[in-house]
Image 1 (tube, rainbow, N blue to C red):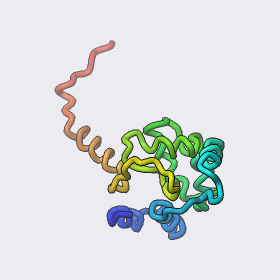
Image 2 (image 1 turned 45 degrees about the vertical axis):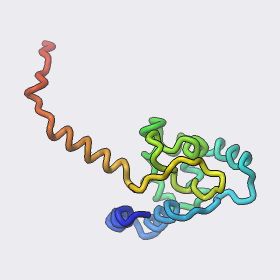
Image 3 (image 1 turned 90 degrees about the horizontal axis):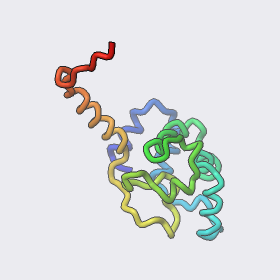
Length: 146
């Protein structure tokens, strides 16, 4: 995990257990489905949500799920409780800039490059806020619908 990611977690209003869990699934390259072939792993991932995978197999504290809940919104328009773990494994995010945490410990991983930035959504939010703060409403007058 980058220094920026560690600093963010240290300041986040989360319990120490949740912070450790989040850092662990981002940094460890663990096969959370040992003893299964690639086909068996993909079949299992297709039957469970990413939220269930994080809880049951990665052993995250339930409170940690809220941190990850919106990770799938930009691509699937659904939370991690409604998206299969296989879809997360195969898709990454729609920018192909990171792999979902907890799915990186298999020797048959997808070959996409992992981003060095830990919080891509925070950066995107900052950019959108900067753009909206520069917006001048006088240049875009409202239509009179009345």
